[in-house]
Image (cartoon, rainbow, N blue to C red; front, side, top):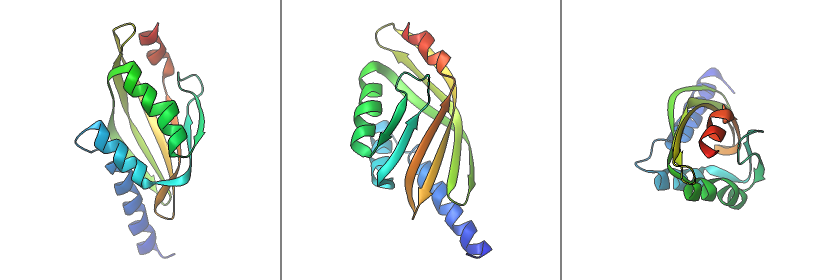
Length: 139
């Protein structure tokens, strides 16, 4: 691949990942994400995070991560401040926030997401997060 093709591919990957964060609402972001992932996506929530584990495929991700976020938190969101990209990987750096419904306690935690792309689709996700801040809201 030549330099121009690499730069174009990197820009396309960045635009795809950005689109999963920058919709008008969480439902739109979820739909964009669902359309952007491979059927065998490997999604890893950080060890120590309440939803820790690796989930394969959209159904496992939806059940083990997004359904729980939607039912256990009020206004759970991620605000991305920076993106870094190189060829088939994109890093998004930002902050999680929300209110845990059972305790009514808010939280704010720094986060980084590492996205890997294959053939123009998202094939892997890894979360790196200050999970202690999340647990404080949950206890």
